[in-house]
Length: 297
Image 1 (tube, rainbow, N blue to C red):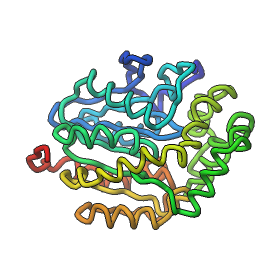
Image 2: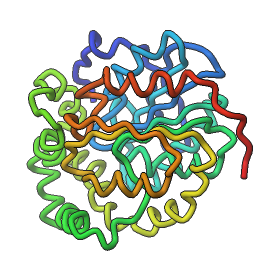
Image 3: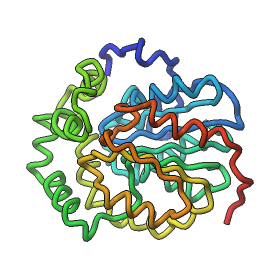
């Protein structure tokens, strides 16, 4: 938690906001209450993953990116569950206390299930939604994801997370379309947030176990998926993602037929890390065009 941060790559001023369960670190760059973008990361990363998009968009937009409790530079409380349901409650409280006004929501990976409950409950505050290799449904019946979830959530999975740093040393590089783009310098910024076995077991592993254990929570989001249809949606998808395969994107297409979909065939799970220019080419016009008048349905 005290390791050196690459301030050349991540030159943003740090802010902290206290919620009930601890202090949340976030960056808040740029200006414009009518053009605010909130970026929500997944696991096992932190707001560092959004640095390219923040640097490019902050001259014209207010860009907010938090670190979930347990991640990045935020507090890491003990004795808490670190489940997606728990993170979702924290995210809602963070937005409520920061009060950024209406915003564009950009989610990646677990950032979707963490932020979608707020978007569903407060559609009047979410002007647009950008989905990057994420989901909002139970994996029940998906044989590949069920198999992965069973291994990840097992006793062996916990040992791998704690002792081998499996999430960051194996899964993260494996989910890149081009592993060479995960340089040692970039990888270090993620590895050094989880140098101790306790944090890897207590913070990272619960989200691996939740792939199956939180099925009811994911299913509740799926039941409310129609709420997202009331907003303009952009889906950006890395086509070489080893975690989220093409059938996951196909499910989004069927769920949100009016969404604009931009595929980046050479990118993996983190297209905004691997090919930020392609992501910005899709994202910049989407967040710059005035959203249609929105109303709660």
